[in-house]
Image (tube, rainbow, N blue to C red; front, top):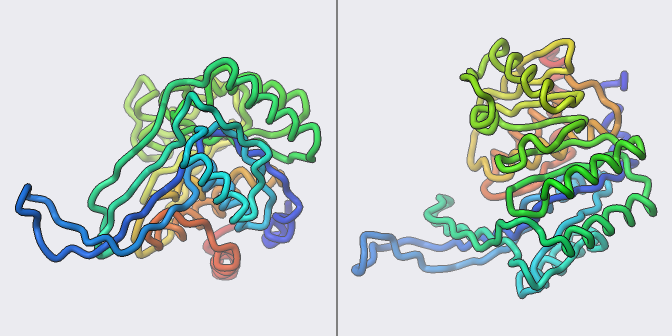
Length: 333
């Protein structure tokens, strides 16, 4: 794409399949006036409870907010929280056609207790074992059904190590994508980090890189380029995008590599920023955008959502305004 503003104009034409671990992000917010007499912990007077879509569902929310059409494929529990998930998705104009329910799993719920906009505690309810073979078959059938009936422009793997993305599911879907000439991207986690062979775009963060690479990795371009070369030798992928938290992003295409700093922000909460970066990167990939432009947009979007408390999707109009402003100042290419 040659025009700087062209990507925003084409977002609405894109259909993306989001495959991975979905969850409910639950926020329990209240007021703290005193410490418990039973233990040295604050007593939270509960005032508000809110459930939001998280994990791969938050990636889909970001794609939706940008104007694209996402299709989620995942396995959730046949439980109360799973039924709630099936209500939350259409409430946000997201399809449930790729959702498989199983009595053998719990729907993942992350409950955060907050007071004065500060997180005091998080409780996780989840199963993290790999899918059973029967669950894998149902999930793969759901993926193929969407690929057969919709014009999918990219497949995004959002891995939170909750078991949905088993090695078999990963390999079969990547092969299906290669057969259909559909680009793929992954936001990997620790368990199956090296299973994404022949993926198009590999997007780990610095912590994940350091846990997997057999040599020290510093957050500088030369060190990250060496790490990316090691990744490429094992995964045979096309593009690498490494998020560096407050230091920005690193990207390489096999020929050149660059680091890009973050833009100044008032950080309120980093929850969900990785989902936003990944959604923007995946959408850019689906459009065949230049990798540097993908990194620029993803970097801006990730910073934007950090200005808000909780897991929230990107604001497309604000993202476009920020991008155009930086472009006019010559601060981005």
